[in-house]
Length: 445
Image (cartoon, rainbow, N blue to C red):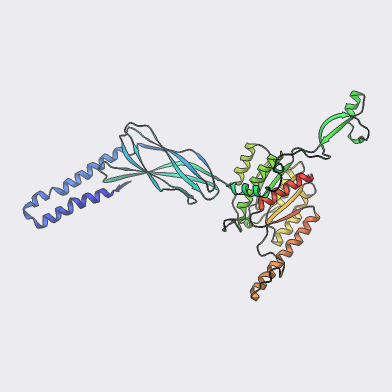
């Protein structure tokens, strides 16, 4: 696309306008002044023809994928190649998604005659996690006399992956366990009677007959006892509700608000890193009206990347969660006893009743914990004595009913061996990590 530059306006203002004025006031110079417009046109046409030499001889390449951290700056490498071109000035513009910001909208480069490809590092910052695409890069070339500009749009295909920022969560966990021994976050040897086979040894007085290994006894012709140890690797699953209720705003430490799902995703990744340091296997699942994704429990850096790739694209939906389908899905895939941590708002009575009915499939075999944000208005009636009007009284009455329903839900879940955690503000990751460490310490699995 050809765009007139500011130089052509300056040329017209410096030549044609004075010539027109002289043509009106000086009749004796009129024959000479008639040659001014054609000369200006010839100059502009020659400059335009010189610009067309660069057409379709520029190439732009970019990496197919770029990984970023939400709120932290990164750089997108762009390579520009010119085929059989001399030196000229170049302006580069990049079409970024709306959730990205950059220090500048365009930049200027100088392509040297006979030089190699030019590499440009474009700084950008993503403010929202997820997967995005950069599809266009615009190049604008200025003509030799700076009268015209040639703009071409080049198609590129770069996938921008913005992962959650876990720095604030790690800092909050560090402050939580500051008063404790630092070794509580490290893998420790647990004592007690486990059921994982360790080794064989000779029979000692007081050993149970149920622990005798009869095949080894027959082979060695003396009593041999099996010795057990605490299970070293246990399975921990975090099940995240990504339905309509997960999009409700919750307050942040900065004074703003964000969807509750954002805290749930960060908590899952933090809990996964803690579980790996404890030597356990960690898995995740996201569900709404159906199971959107599932990663079986495992450990290692590559597995943590798989869990992160599943969670960073999860967004709040418009459907209601189906706990029955999720319970059937998990029961068919879990063979070992595991710790299942649900992050799901259950303050709606209909959803709470559905959860109680569906969770019976899993609660008989697995250890289950439910974490949900505590509604800001849920509090006992008259806990705040400052009531200024009848409207505030009705609001406190509604909050009391919500608080009473949650207390009843806690009692019903406790009868099935399920613990319900009501999380305030941004303590979701801290409370769940603390609960997980208590489960390890008490050997509840």
